[in-house]
Image (cartoon, rainbow, N blue to C red):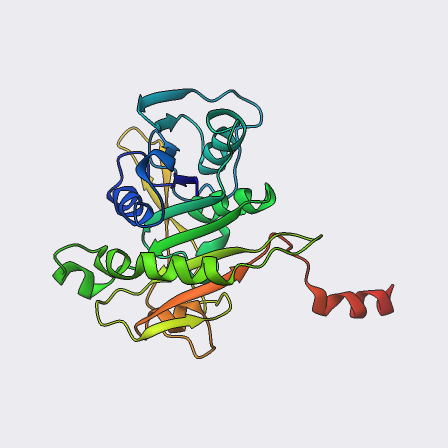
Length: 257
């Protein structure tokens, strides 16, 4: 098994070190390739550097940094660095912070896994939910460190290759506690009224700036979802596709038109 590792927190992020250790439990070190952004690229989603070239720098054996985005890293791995023997698995993360619910739509961690799936490769995004208990841990990534390999192995044992349509990729979120209750296979959720906003700031010379701010990540939800599972001490596993069609609205619109 040849594995491509990437993230959106950058080449020096501690979560990438966690992911590398997990990957060593799946294959030999020479089959692990790390291609990650040169700096933090959180919140870029599935962005690609379509209108500008990206610089790729070899840091060490099988380790590269990219000046672009997480999806660029996946493309660089498949079509350049590993083109003669492409990866059979892409792992993205481990993100510092959850990629549950609405966060999925902004996440570069998810964007990398999405690109991998579009390229026909089994892809898994992994994220570590943070909370009050995380500060008490010796390492806030401990839930990922302890359970990451087992979850990935279970996914690989049940990964199905179907002909036609968008390939499934997997979104895994580890809860902000070391008291893990198990793994819950759940849909993507929605935190009520939890959206991005802005904090305006005016400098002394009258220039105005806007700082983007996120919403409360610990809103309790009632629906069976990734958020509900994570805040209840479960590792959430959500199978996803790139298809954004609202199938429940097709019949209504057809009738209206």
